[in-house]
Length: 440
Image (cartoon, rainbow, N blue to C red; front, top):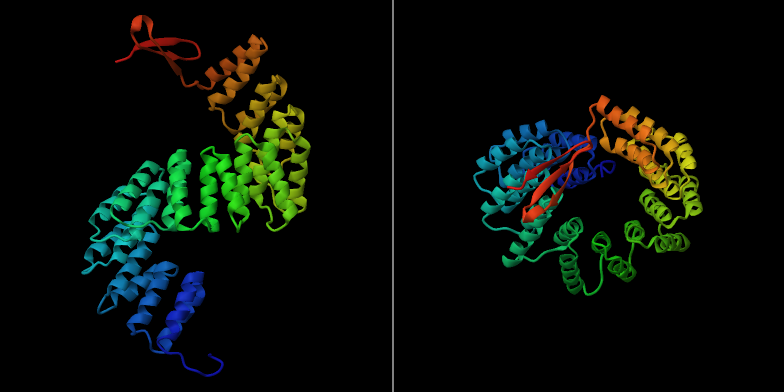
């Protein structure tokens, strides 16, 4: 357009600015802003609001505020854009002040402010505004439900969904994604099934990929791997997340060999390329199934065929697999050859395997490495001391306990409840003594 000599008008720049906003092109957006000024469209309300929104969203918030302050008439679009900019950057006090000062508040401005609080985990403030909204829409409800899920208040999310239905508001796909996540985290299979049935009715037996994946994940995390597989098999379109969810669900729910077979089917079909998460899932399956040779082969395939750099989870899966199989020397050597510094989880996995197989020598070496990372983790000492106790090496047992005393490390007391003479008593159990506290 510029090369042809055609002049832009007030409709040209909003399209350009919106494109820059969506693509998060800060430099290009700033250049377009300069062109707006040069061609004399800076006073056009529509153009000015799109420029303000760009800077509030991904550009310079100071520039956005300057544009806003220089407006003779500040409309609701400009106010909402600036409020969203402050809220997105976590400056909720300024956002709230602007919101309070708005002469007229539309539903967008209410939703923007509620979203700002919800995304920062401030659900009390979000709920306060939510209760004040004159008329809510599905976005208002979705924002609150998603906010509760994100802060782990999943029961509140499900309770609010009931309120949403009682208010006559119909859920959409975004609502269902949040609710399925809540069910997954709660392990609430019954509510999850009810949501699945609702989606099934609305979508006429067909799932989009996002919803399908969420339903699969819900069933797998709630322990119903049969339900997860049925949904997976019924999906016309699948992505790598679909495969990962079922491969991982099978591995974690006692069907490790089926998990491996599904992974191999994925490779055979060749439509979807496995990613780093796929390999975590199938390596877990190999560990649970005792398929050490396959696990080694998949680990090499991941690196050499798919160019995936192993992360700590992949290394941990291999250590766990070798440890379960009793190949503790190989596991120790594998850790020593890792391309990244092993963390406490890696060494603790090996230590747990040593405890399982009664290998004190490698257990001691793993503990020494753990001590270099941190000395105050009582569980590491307890694992080693229990290994000594299991084979009757009481000298080693006492030595570990003495080291715990020297470093001031204490095992958290456990407790049991006994009822002598029908009177409940809490018995606190420490490593060297116990105390009796009558229950009040």
